[in-house]
Length: 336
Image (cartoon, rainbow, N blue to C red; front, side, top):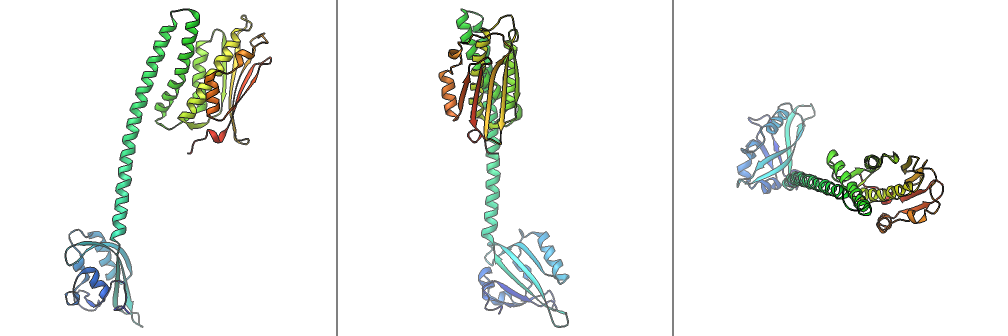
């Protein structure tokens, strides 16, 4: 049976000195490159070499001493010195009285598997290294972009101090748009995540900046759910929100100057309905002219951004002028 097996196999006799090989098949000779007379009467350790794991060899030796089976992966050597990885199985053979009479050892060449595992580990290590380098590069780029945006915003604020009111207002609009991008980059850098952002947090931060700019005439109240999305989505939503708040600020300026207005911004992720809703409306600003349809009309920028995320913008020019953006959540959700 052993002789006909295609699995490299030896039979050893533990009752003889050094547990020598007493039977070997052709598969074993083919694997190791030895002749039969070079193998017979020797202990199997002749296949070991300087690179063979001493700890694994010790475990095999102990299992043989204790007459118990063992399976191990071992680096062995052929007659020509070439190496091969062996999955080795050793089992004791007992007679009818339970006395140990032989050991049978069979092995298979798993060099391809070990080398494939090593190549996979090396590839994973290389990928990890490249990803770390990529993260460092992205971090540096984000840092430079944020600094450049801050420089642009500072220059725009300086420009607002001169020129006619119309120019100052236009520069202010541009500065707020750039500020949206700056806020996103700040959050990316603060949390060390260069792929996703919590838009609810971003909305609260940018709205607070709005409130500081216009604190004498209007209060801005924000109620925003957490919502994780990718950076491009955050930019689109952030710019849309900026434009909607700006439009409502324009309407507040047309109201009763003796009363401080309030703009309420609500951002909801309605998981049951599968939508994201952004509502910007005016409350408590006194009498606002009824003819506000022109002010409520979205700009070309808003139209393009709304279309880009597959959203719908609903406008209501009633007593509490309201703008509501409704977006299917699947259009915005990022894979986590």
